[in-house]
Length: 408
Image (cartoon, rainbow, N blue to C red; front, side, top):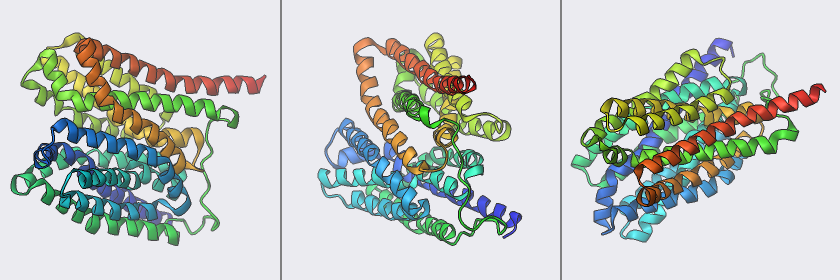
């Protein structure tokens, strides 16, 4: 196969994956907040309980992520994503027909399990398995497409919900996962099995692996620092995103809080676009520090300018820039540091740590706001963001010290 044909196939893979990521995040994640109020009314629950089920499901999904990551390494990302599409459809159907709370809870847990099979971690692993040496660029392109999930599915879900019950909306979403995402994932699995993406001039044995930039001796220390950085970032992002509109209202922005919050989504996409155009030579480690720094600067702007609307908009832009880069870093930094061998399992371990922190964040941040006040809670979030940036920066220090030791 010519290099041009291979390039076209790879572009088709990125666009195909991009479509499944938009649908996956839209149907399995972003739609929930729109449908939650009617879910609560249907099961005679408070909304807090419904969101508690969602958080608990995220937590259990985090525990399952390492095992799913190992399966992705062993059986191929395409096969596992195909299985995930089936699980996602069945889980949405189970929730849609749930007669009572227990069945609904089981369905929500199944949705989060399916998410680990079909969302970014699995998609990143597929790109690494197909083209390890160009995967970092492909990950940036994929996250740019995936960034439109909330922009598209919040209004799509709202429009559907005006004519359908939440149960019927979930059944529609089950059909989309089964009849749109599953064929794409099966096609990807077939392409990987057939080796259709390999250049005819390349060795037939296997695609060359990417070698990590961290020495074997420093891997444990580097993994610990990376895990701390992602956990702290995940905590800050989850806490602020769940509480964004109430938080902006609490700091004095009133009805403008919703308007300010809408700036966040486009800022995420914009940061990925800028990185795609101008960040090709930027190390994922430097990008990790920058992503955490944007979160810190954004929160600091909010803390010092509220209740000014202009300050709130600046916060949403900066926070969105940091969040957008974080999605890229979660896929590219483990590859850069540890290489492509065992990449799926590595992402699974990182995802478990990040999801656990993200699941606990909304409750703990709400507790902080109630106990020490909104302004102090924001200060705590800033400190955590600084600690995340420091953890990422320390990885570079570890690598630098090992280089000096090798020279001596």
